[in-house]
Length: 378
Image (cartoon, rainbow, N blue to C red):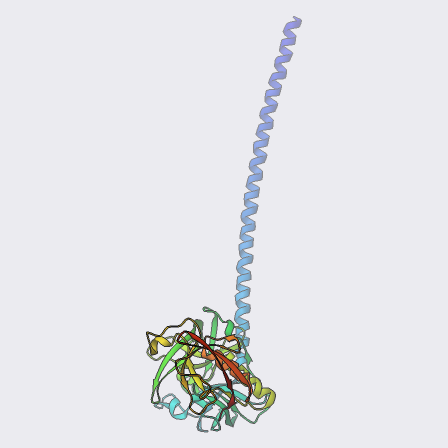
């Protein structure tokens, strides 16, 4: 009897333990399943909330960017002027060739005391006159104080002070794909200070120009798909910070959506001299050279890796009796490597009349050093 009761007690313990294991397992499964569902729900909800926050932030950023560029353009437009060769600028786009007949173009104020940067083909030669129309409608007589037909650039002076002036950027550091805005008077005064947008679609471009004066080349140009029409000439090409990176100059009429601007850095020393000294005494080296990417237009058999090709040594200029010859390749000036005519010009613009520069030249695979004393450009 005792043994029977002992076996019964042991059996009950086993049954109880088995039931306890089942209950614990079921409870564990239930708790785990509930936790997973809560975690999934929480994660999905957080993701949705984060997504909403990201979308909201993106919308805010886009709104801020749009507001910023709007404000920047409003400020920049104040510094853009109209330039014409006759005083009456009440032209209409419905008149045939109104832009060319009036000489209507664009310029930008680069100092508070009335210096204005534009194209040479808009303002004319040095000492010539033109008329400048400010944003407020006031018209002033302007005098061309500096001009360079090769660069297609000119600086005009008007007798006004306390002007808003445009900020200059750095054209050496622009990249393809950057946003760009062109401002100008495209086809008449009815559309003055028109803004077009696009990107920098190319740098260091060279184009061939055929006109009544013959064939010439413009090099080191900025290419953009921002729309540039003839009346935009002389207007600013700015970046998204409102800084001028180029001066709108020419447009290829055979292709749509391709315009060009002269890099701003080449003319910075001249603007600085006028602002600081009220004048610019241009040092003159008396040569004209082409970048290597122009050479295929001139001589397909001529090849060189670096430097610029001397196409012309001006008679009676400072380089004429120096030993420099047409066909030479200039690789350095004062030990500074150069690969563009614009780099040579920019360096010469920093020098004074009477300064001596040293050119490193390649001629028939032989290197020469030639010294030239700069003269005043007449």
